[in-house]
Image (tube, rainbow, N blue to C red):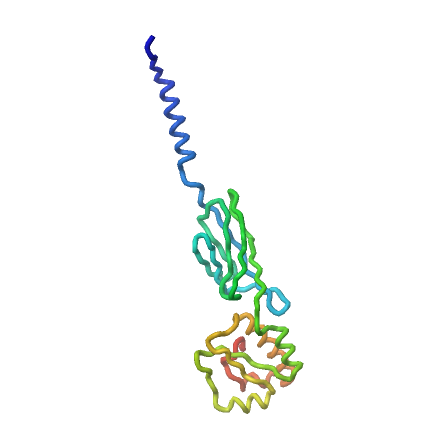
Length: 202
């Protein structure tokens, strides 16, 4: 007895094969996102920042924070990812995250910043009678004529980090403490006489 050809059965088999190829042969879904904020710990307090770069290691993709301090990576597939925040510590902390079929928002990245200057250092310098106003210059420090007289008058010293400063958030936090100290001591009269390139001075 010969083989019986069943057109309906052949058509069903063909449809099943096409469905299998369509489902299992396509690329995994890749429209997921990872997003959140970056927060740094400086001088015993947490600070939300707006200037930092986040790197997605697997994709070698980088993202600058937006005006609200948020980062976002899009077009991602399910899987394991690693992120790190640049611009702060020399050995950045690695953050691990799993995408399991859906986007993840509010994945905030918390960084303990290793600062050589901060709020606590400023308070110690004031107690020692050696407050500084911090500058960030270029390769060669800039000297203003007569600046020594201003330093002596208001009992502080300028300090220029040159072209290798610590994170600017650390510098600003230190200077803000010194600003408050000088305001209380000299009733803000010092502000019109000091150098205008002091970091964070309005």
